[in-house]
Image (cartoon, rainbow, N blue to C red; front, top):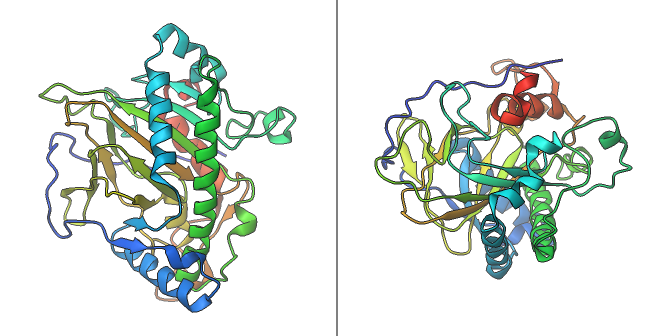
Length: 342
């Protein structure tokens, strides 16, 4: 089954972020999600739920991941992107033909409705580490299997995948908070994310000279495909589109991750949780690194409207699908290495 990817018709010519309607993202202390006291976990979950309903974005603090571990990934990324192009291309996603490895500038167009647009960054795709004997990998599933790692930088694998596992564990805890916020059993999602399409993109945004071409900003206007994203970034650049259609800046906050809801969670919740349009413009004049961790469900997980999110007055808006169908259709629309599958 082929699904048409979600398309957006947005004006890319306005590159200024404005503070209108809401001028900042809510900041939520998630420390009590790790408490043994259900009431304390529920209090955090309620605050998370409010942010997801009103904005679709939030900052979280007291999440348990040390800044030094994030900085170590930035340093590993800087070392990899300093390698000659001929070396980086050994790990090129076009050669691998699945969702792992190096993506050069021009290899992705998140705002895929514009045929002339592409995103001005380079990336390294890291997924759940699975052996080459994995049944899904052997069946040709592009979302599963072993990662590819740069042999020239043996520390890259250690540093990056340690971070991947830390963020994955945090994401599992956030899933439990989201379940509570949705009046659903706390562990509802557990069996749906035990082999997740979790994807870490290790990104470098080069400096962009002024004036910036609106067709080639850091990442074009889009919503994320998966359940939610956990983001760390080294410099400002993220902008979020509010309900009035204006762009507001969402700069890094020390000690915080940005969390945003993706399309799969929006479908699961009947749009009770918002999958909000956003983009990235690196106007800092210096390189910018970011680490979006896209937490997707299991490939074959059925995404059907939760009972708590529908009623006679609010019937289900979307037909059931699998998480894999939705994610792969969107990857195919956005990534150059999937052009022959469109």
